[in-house]
Amino acid sequence: MDFQSCQQLIACKINTLGSERVSLEAALARVTASLHKAIVPQPEFRQSLRDGYVIGDYGQHVGETVFFPVSGMIPAGRIAPPSLEPEKASRIMTGGMVPKGGTRVLPQEDCVETSRGIEVPLAALKRRNTFIQEQGSEIAAGAEVVQAGTVLLPDHISTLAAVGCEDIEVYNRPRVGYLCTGSELVDTPQELHPGLKVSSNRYLLDGLIRQFGAVPAYLGTVHDSADKLAAIIDKLSYDRYDLVISTGGMGPGKYDLIEQAFINTGGDVLYNGLDLRPGKATLCGTLARTLFFGLPGPPTAVRALMNCIVGPALLQMQGIVKHYPITIQAHLTHDFAVKRPGVMQLKGGILSFNNGRCEVKEASKLMPPCCYLIIPADRASFEKGEPIAVQLTLAPFSSTVGEP
Image (cartoon, rainbow, N blue to C red; front, side, top):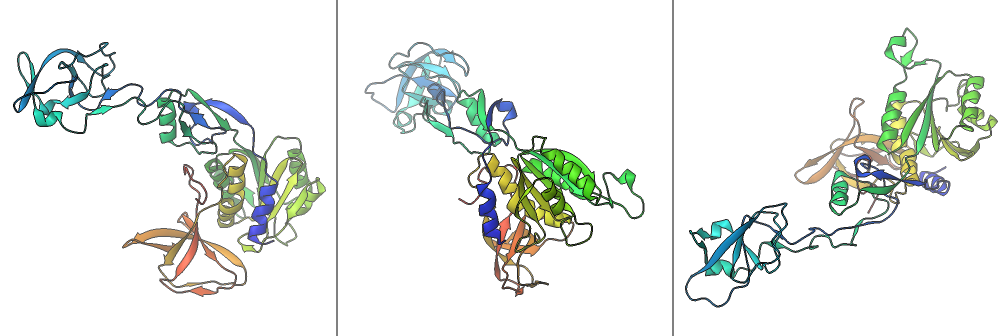
């Protein structure tokens, strides 16, 4: 199956999860399930933008300065006096509540303090800036603050708190079960001996699943046994997972048993191969209400397929409409050749900027990719400096996940 058809098929099989209400403290990186409006305006009252003096209306004056008698002080956090008489002044601090009748705040550096009050240059009284922020000038009560389908960043949460929200409605996190197959795999370095290796996919998937806003549940490492695989897959029918991922066991070899075990336990195969590398040996299907992905074993393949296929499915479950990675153009910093052309390929890349130009190079094994070079099936090589399409990796706290 080609890549675009794969995305469309998966999208048709996904339903948005239910929702719950959570406190603002627990809302970071959750996805809003409804529109949230301001309960109180911002600012909540007319407030001073400077330390200085708030004055009432004043009449015509002769000369270069104006005198205002001063009474009282209005610090931030204290209720202002009921009103301010014309041609009177009160001391006020930044954030202080401007009383009724206050027409402007005079910054303290514009005022000359005397024993009886303040003298102010007439020019200061004629400035357009009154240094008063009006009630609701930033956000009016009832204004739409956060749309549904928004990945909540610290800035969103701060704003929601300021406008009076105490808890918010968010989509449930998908519960993702995952298992790693291979008789050569162990879970920890303490279990190693010759012929065995640590299942690094266990740790990779745990992080990636969390990165896409889901809750991981490790189902264990399973040896290459049809009976053992069937037993654990059959158990998925009774456990409540929204999505399940397996790694390994997807090739044509004698011990690649995932697909048959999936079918034997009642799984419905959507596709069992992609016109894509990595991903040629990939399974997607449904087991009752659970979406199942059988991924190849190499961690580089798991990382790439999580970014472009499995991760977007998890985001879609959480109500994010634009859930696919963004694609941009970058210029290669080196010549690039494809070993096996003829099929679309994704290669991990590292982005940089040079004199305002976005550049990309192929990522080494020890460099986590920040993008994937998209290599069309009909291209075998690229030259240094040539533009190439790159697919960005999805960041855990990106407010706009997919293309605008």
